[in-house]
Length: 469
Image (tube, rainbow, N blue to C red):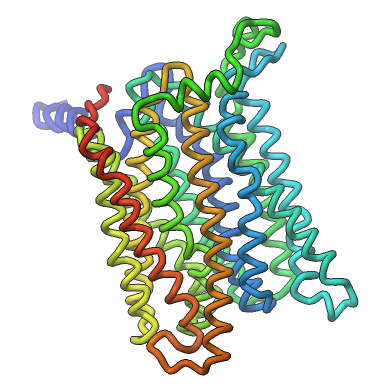
């Protein structure tokens, strides 16, 4: 090897981690390939999220003509499982097992819940949308669909909370925020790929194709999660033996919540998440009803949202590793969300799909900055040996706020649309865009409220010390 080649290799070895996202997360004991394989559980979670929040809500509202309020409530049903994420994280921290595993049993249980929900979901949705055609009572389809969404949501919350805790177990403490960032980037990548695949598969929509797509997702979920957890957690029967002295959930939660500004931090996470999530159930129906986009085109909206989020997470990881304050980064994300929602509002009067896609990508980018910033701040303020609880608390607040926001978005949209039709309004937001526009305006107001809630945290917090490789 000549001297020039040697210089190039040395320069690449030195500079590579600066340009390759998360290349500095890997260690000698945990190579990047192992972390990437573990992150496959996030791909399955991203696939489930795209189906629940993106593809299926568009299909139910536009193709099956189910009222948006019913769809929103179904999608919000996982909210019932979201508050238990903190408990799930704590239980995986203190799990007793003769096999010596803490995390794997919960990942497997969550996988089975996801599979069961996907198995019955397409048939339940067809009964909800076309029950009269086959003589089935409406309540049968609604109950079955609700159960399916609840099972998938409960499984998703379990797998994601415990999987992230397992990921942080594998790396040194200094690298834990970065490995969680890697996991969430994988989640967004999985959502992007899933959105494109589902959009292509449902280009020519028919009931049989819907069944194949959803049940194919069920099989893929099991395969991805088994591959993700294969030989990841080291068995340690002594650590999981029965009868050892472990703090209860109440004691651990009291310790976690007693940290400075812990309550305000969670409140800020909740408000900001609601602001970004209220439009989730309305994004694809908005494109279909207001702009006349096809199922394939509106599914690509989810891909645009995820691409923006992916860029936001990558930028946030880079900035945080350089010492940027996490709360200031979160505030920047909330601020950037305002022009994103304004662009979506502008797409209706201009009837511009390009403006709509640009606004959607901006919202995703802003949400990525906000989520990564609040997640990093939560992890770094967590007491030692409570990573699962900390991740569960952040996830519980985020998922609960998102579920509540989704339900509110659908109900508000239906109420405003019905009011506009009855009053024959001639305002700027009249017609099909009326209900959607009001929801987006509310989200802009909530983003400003989130910034106000985070101002004391920005003033109080110091700069985050960059993690060393």
